[in-house]
Amino acid sequence: MTEPAAVPTFQAKFSHEAKLKELLHRITSLEIKLCSDAAKEFAKLLKSETGGDLLRDYVRGSPKCSELLEAWKLREGKQGMNYVFDLIAVILNHSEGKYNRSDGESVNVSKDLDKFARLLISERLSDIHKEVNSKEWRRQRAALSLAASIVRRGASLASEVSKSFDFKLTEFGRIASEHRRRRPEARVGLLRKSFVGFAMSFLEVGKPGLLRWVLQQRVMYSGVLRGLGNDDDETVVFVLTVLRDRVLVVESLVPPGLRSVLFGSATLEQLVEVCGREGGGDAAEVAFGVLVRVCTDPCNGLMPDSKMRLRGNTKRVLDLMKKLRVTEVQYHRDLLFAIVESKASFGLSYLKEFPYNIENFKSSSW
Image 1 (cartoon, rainbow, N blue to C red):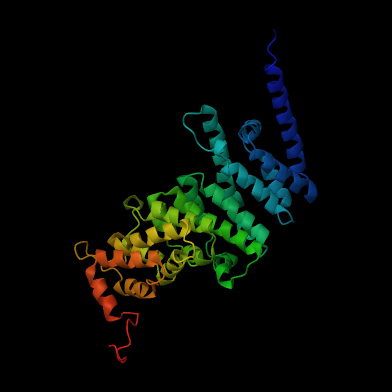
Image 2 (image 1 turned 60 degrees about the horizontal axis):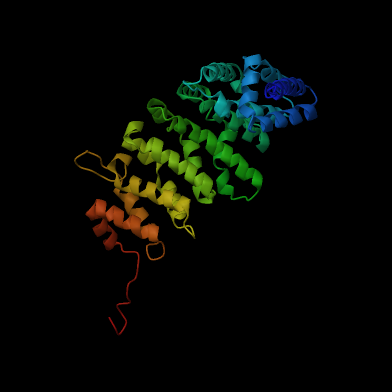
């Protein structure tokens, strides 16, 4: 009896090639409807179960990703660049396009995509800057998502982006402070998620030298941290987990002074607010863990330590203690005890300025 399995495999491969040819033809069309629909369909297929095979077929047939570059150039200065950016971001983020030493084919695909990403940095970064500065949230979101997808490909590409990206773009600073407007529109949330993703992508890579340099981009990171109180739990957990695992560790080589700057008074207040969220949850738990680490470990720049010759920032810690709602929130109470246990003098200072009126001494029962 003949085994029929080979026929469907051949048909599937033929179908893949035919679909790729069709999509690439439409993506490089001047008609925005054809281009946008094809880009969305391509991205959707890449996210499906057979997306890895589709990606490999594409890169094997077009190692320089020339069709994507052609679509980019065709849409330059025109409407619809965000569709091209979104598609490229999906491709560069795809797990099957990342380096995997045990898979020879994966190595070749990842090298080709790295070359493509490097080309975008060296020759097309100005286009990304233009999209970030466009004042149109969809274009800004797509540009930041694309930049993050390049950074996440590894330390080398992350370093190149950090050296070339203009962190002083006018709109970049405005996007960073968007949380202060407290506007509920979905577009603001989506744009902020892309901004946060871009900022944290450098930290996710975790290269020590890069961490020290990029954390000095204060506008970017203050924009991330000072808006956490208005973020959803998923975003809060993502940001704080990356900080905890990549920055607040010995291996990061980030000095106490820089860590102290990162966790300024406004940021600490945001974390305290997250800790006190009704119902607690993962975000509150992670925020509590980060606060304990930041406020009790001298390596993080706040807790003084004479043996390590670290002055710390006693005033900032004490100010934080006085803002804790220890009679209402368990995490606040536990944080207060953790700080006092770490250094008893904080307990004495706290009692001197005790923020609660235990009893009215003028009453007849005093």
